[in-house]
Image (cartoon, rainbow, N blue to C red; front, side):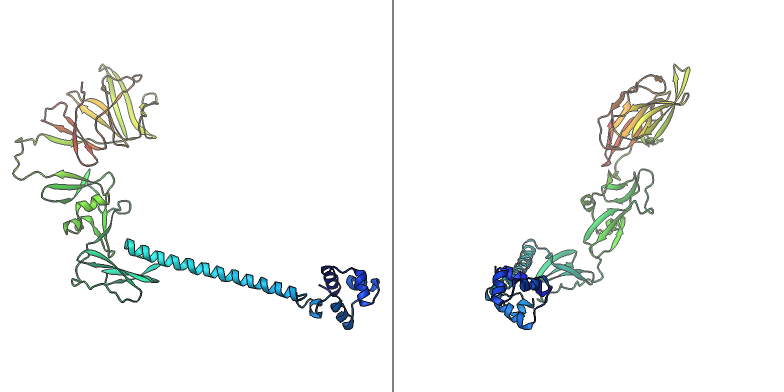
Length: 406
């Protein structure tokens, strides 16, 4: 800001008219106006007189300081004091918040027996323990004899986990059991199930819709196959239940149990093949031939007339997982079966290969069974014309179905 504008500004602040201002300095109004416009610059003697007329110092007039008088000086000092107090209060609030957070975090850790939030894992100790270092307290997780103990001590108290006398002993504490079948291929099931464990009374099979490779992870990050873990007694079937690993449990045949005497080993069970496409060669009244393919499309079952390549939907109630043929009778009569994604089972009410024509509707009858994963046919003898249909659910239970076979 130039001197002329500064004189004008201070004169206005003091509420002095330009006429009175000129009279105090014993100059003309024109001269005073020329100073304020910047046309003429007052000399050093005139600057002293101007400062006296405006009741400010020469430094203030020259804009070297903003304090016009003692009142302005006090006001500025008060503003500085307020600003300093504001900063000090903010620092006090931040420090108080952090202090309360640390104390509260520490109290919650003590009450709920956990590590404070303001802590970090620093190291493993011989693979049997680790410590969370905190600001106020340290948390120690110690493993001894397959038991994890949790200890808390305040900073620099010197706590240390007791050493495990059996240093070569593998830790049995399980932290995770997972099915990694999507990434592993060296443990695929054969046929429907894979035996992975047996005890005195039961045999345990993995579900094998998709192959299963189950890994056990221990507290010290060691991993091994679930078969080895079970055989070595490190995990139990109860552990598999806890981690939702699906398996089928079958009761073992007792050694002294008498089996039915039958040279052909009847009764015997055969698995029914589940497919996504089936072709029937239909014979109405044993004369008129018709070839139809039943196929899963967009989770529905459609029928395709292979003679004229027309198609129609026959089952849309639920999402379909697989279809199958139910053969029975001396002439190999057939019914269409459907297993849905939710595990429900449907079987056609009438025969397909003898009584069906293209324009007929196929009525699917829902069976009284749930969570079906596979099917079997049990033949009582070699000449059994129908056989018993058995549904196997997700838990490995066998349910004999009562069917209306005509």
